[in-house]
Image (spheres, rainbow, N blue to C red):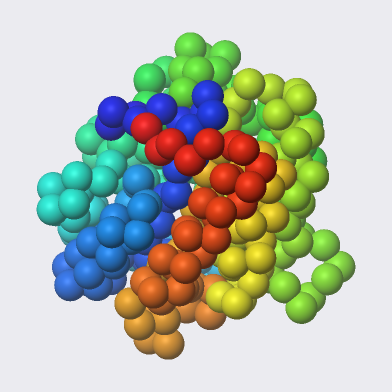
Length: 255
Ligand code: PEP
Ligand code: MN
């Protein structure tokens, strides 16, 4: 993707704000995460919010800002697609994110399967690993094998964290499939101070990368502020992740 290999021993950090909010916000965050070692810029512009009264994203204007930030930084972009009717609009997006709520939107999965677009398939809120893999099969059965899985925590009885990070899914999936798997500690935890320990846990468990939400001003974020890292905290997490990779002899190349 954009000159990078995902999987095959390479490790990638995808980072950016939950929602693209403005040119200044996105470009500030994009430049700082790049400096800290992120290899992909992630930002949502079509947001699947639980409440219809919450900020729904900048939509097409947000896509323009993502293109601008890609031009500025050279980072390929990852953003969430919600419907098969958006495929044309997303034509130049580097990685299509299919969010947890759409993991079983079979029409969307089949439509993406008809393209060759790399897709980051997030685990459904209460999806078993089998159901998640079947969703990946929906895409691959159409001929698109560029599927990346993303463990983003599952809903359990626990309420202290937003979700429960299923770390065991990572080694288990490496047994069951050749597909790369990215850990998303931000949505698993829902709390910014939990992002570092969960990032380290996913890394040690063999994740092929991480997706982390970063915001320049989390207190005023329009979406998912409580789980967002400030750029300086993000830089520290990336440094520690590298140390874990070195300690476990996993290699540190991001290519
Ligand atoms: C997101 O990535 O911002 C998001 C909405 O995540 P999920 O689909 O995992 O809830
Ligand atoms: Mn989010």
